[in-house]
Amino acid sequence: MPIAHLPVPSAIELQHSQQTTEYIVEKIQQAKGSVTFEQFMQWALYAPGLGYYRAGLRKFGAQGDFVTAPELSPAFSQCIARQCADILSALSSASILELGAGSGVMAADILTELEQLDSLPEHYYILDISAELQQRQRETLQHKVPHLLDRVLWLQSWPEDFCGVIVGNEVLDAMPVQRFRVTAEGVQEQYVGWDGEHYVSVFKPANPRLEHAVQALGALPEGYESEWNPHLSGWFQALFAAMKQGVVLLIDYGFPRHEFYHPQRDEGTLMCHYRHHAHPEALLYPGLQDITAHVDFTAVAEAAYEAGFHVLGYTPQMYFLLHAGLEALLSASDPQDVVAHTRLTQQIQALIMPAEMGELFKVIALSKDLDIVLSGFQQNFKTRL
Image (cartoon, rainbow, N blue to C red; front, side):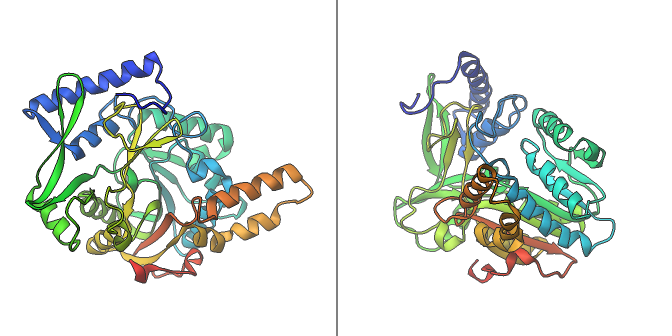
């Protein structure tokens, strides 16, 4: 059912959502009545040719559903590039791998900055499962850095013996999650069914793995609802196996566990994004809207450590950017060019102010076979994970 404050989808969008619904309903019927919310989220986001990240709908920027930090300001990517330069200089024959490169803006801006720093990587790899986004990335790079396009290679799977820097901006929040509820009878998991006209949400006893994971969080009050990501362990094991040596930089919005599962956060963190409107109705408009959950960075650190990584640093985005060169970028801006300087100042405020992206977004650095001090983590909060 539509929500009053949301924009009304076009006829073409509604047709696409209907096709996605038909795909999911068939899966529900094959499962004899219901599927886990995790499965629903997987299909709504990644069903071939239909899911939000697999279809040709505009997602990023003013004409899409949300704005990411690289879309907001090139200063974000320039700071990432400066941190990458430090890491690349400590390695030989090193490359960069970007996970889920969106519109390609961050790749273009990182390459531009690294060229100015005389620190270009051997290759700039992009791992993105969306053919439509790959094409958009290619167009962006062709427009912004045509002379560097030959350094960019698209991958369909994890590389082998990768050496360098792996960057992922807002990748973890797009992983399908399991939703649970604490009841007097025990932990229950959210399922999604179909009543012939609409999706319906029901809760059933959780499987042993989810039940154990929730019990390990400690005592949560009855009625408490939240999310748990079952994919982190396998994902980091695959990431570790793909690397020979280097550093992983992951940027996303979320909290350490004691904040993520705070008693007052009793409805979880699940959020949907449609045409710059955020709302919690995940069963609405499948295929047209993004579905996300905040990141439990304690779980990220644990899964990474168990896979074999060393946690180098963890810090809010504002501190990372300030120490990775943001102040230098602002100082280099010409205050006489009032329009450009004002625009940059406003962009930087959005990136670092606590009420904007500065505090909610975190950066975590993981290393394999490389002991290095990273400038962006001079204020390091990893002991709070």
